Image (cartoon, rainbow, N blue to C red; front, top):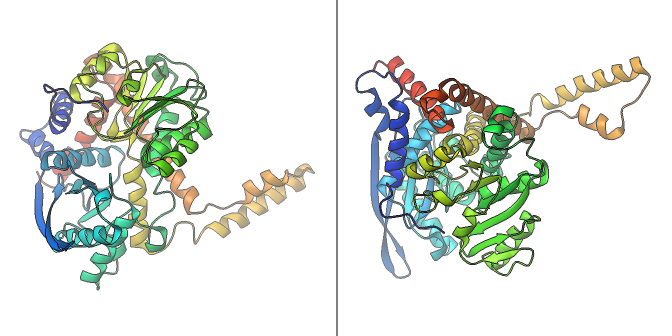
Length: 474
């Protein structure tokens, strides 16, 4: 992977620079810009767990950026490079992201300095439960105040442990399951949550390609069909985004970048085959369906239509921005393009679909899961069969009036009532469409001021947060 140059602003500085660029175009009340920009609070905890015959000390964080809406929302990541600045920057992005897609949460983020691969499952469970306890007793995990979700290094398993830890401590809370999202289905999770962020990336691209003028700004024409795509990072987000684009939209995945190098094949790479190979071997090395490039970061610079950075922040930076050839970059990861690189790419004419919009699928479906947990009923349970009955009457009437019958396959599709997964996908698609349309409207109206999609997203988000604070009396 690429190395960030020494003169590159930090991830947190990049977020602040992008925020300041947008806020400078706004007429905010005195002090409001600073109130929105800074994190409200950050809790640092150091706790011990007895493991392997000794007491191991771990450092964890939970940052709350804005409580203009509650609960606050944001994932918990497990990684060795977790630090206060990173967590606060990610919490800020969560605030702006939720405001942009109109999810009624404030922004938060958590992290634990740990290599999850270095510990056995039972050890990781003990560490997670102790970390959860430290946060729960300070209401930094709570269905009405602070609701975590999975992030890098965590998943449904860790969320299940946290939810159980919360229930054991707060055993009188009827809404205990809503204390975290991204849980397994059998513990209150929701259909479609695992692939939600990758699905959101797909929906974002689909909506972008519905806007002919925007596609032309990126130097392209037509639809997603046949577009050449490079994806960096085949984790949960990158895998699902690439898989859906390949299988459902006709994109050709010509490059996949992973930790141990990259795969390149102009004729196309089968995403599912690569995923299976990684599961079996731990990397892309040895995959026979494409050329292996040892220095995977170089493939970021290959010619393509769409580049999807779906791994870590600062992947595209001052050190490689001049050599990036993609016409369109969609930020599936948080902060993969630094502020300096963003400026270089914009001047070159590259269109960037920003992270605060592109990867909002996860928090959107987390919102649906939270609502499901609070309502104590799965989506579709009460209306599905009623809708099927209504559809059946309509189809029967059409067939009687026309004297012709629908084919069995089409009839079944028309009769089918919405289940939870179809409702989740519908809600996510609607969210991504409306958010893009709002951004595009601002982009087009203020392009003469240097406003791009990212700045448009910030303008919308900052204004919505500011309006909330004003309504609260600030």
